[in-house]
Image (cartoon, rainbow, N blue to C red; front, side):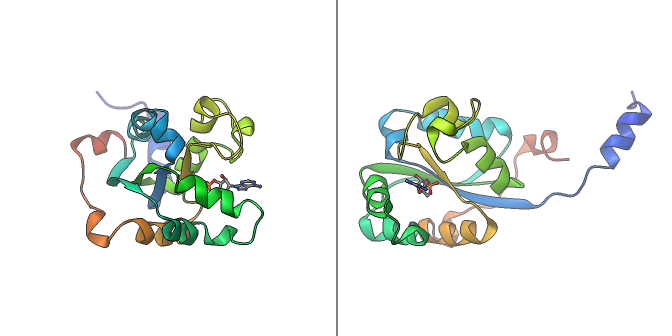
Length: 167
Ligand code: CMP
């Protein structure tokens, strides 16, 4: 059975998208609160592909390099101590416009300002305890991926279901 003509027109007018990768970190509070599965599940359910995944302890040196842009700010030390305070789960997710999509799923930096339906808006409440980090742009994503993963740890693959998600 064919599609109605309006549906065909709408489908064929869809813009091209950029296939992007974003570096995501479930921070120590996410691990301690047992929210790793719930957080990863949201990205999978949205249709994003996990192309790298591991649990690590972030040492002070790695934490300082990751948060280098915030060096000198009053909250830098607290930020470094927090991310280095326990195991984190770090991953690379891939998909159409993944950087913006992931940021919108994560929600506002300050959890009390995060909209319901976002990860922070549903699971976090205050201050630095904002559960998750996600790259804020293509350059940052590239730099952060190379900080947390060797090139051979980031995989390229397709899934049978991708044709139901990506046109
Ligand atoms: P994250 O997404 O990990 O990246 C930078 C972090 O800096 C951010 O989460 C916040 O936790 C933190 N941050 C940004 N702005 C402020 C601020 N004004 N005060 C305290 N922490 C901040």
